[in-house]
Length: 143
Image (cartoon, rainbow, N blue to C red; front, side, top):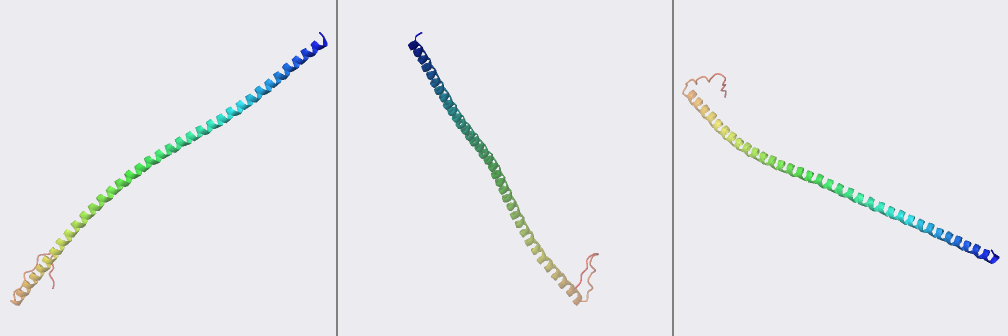
């Protein structure tokens, strides 16, 4: 082979080697860029997944709180109803106590009137010098 042929062959081999090297640099660069993009996409996916999990957790917490609030509201309503019933019962007892006090007051007036009448009869008997009968056993009549 002539020198010129040798130079052309060598130059061709160098061009092929340089093109191959540039191609592999380009492929490596694109591979790194794709890997970086894939990492960024994975990181974004992870962030999206984490945000979705947090949103789901918050929804679950909200639902749990609503359920607890519903239970508390039901309990408060029940206690309110119990308090209302208790107030009505106490009002009824107060009315009954008032009626019994009125009856007791009326009985006391009658009793005092009866005692006064008995005293008047005893005084009348004494004024006519009639001995009063002895009271039944267990009853002590004193002035």
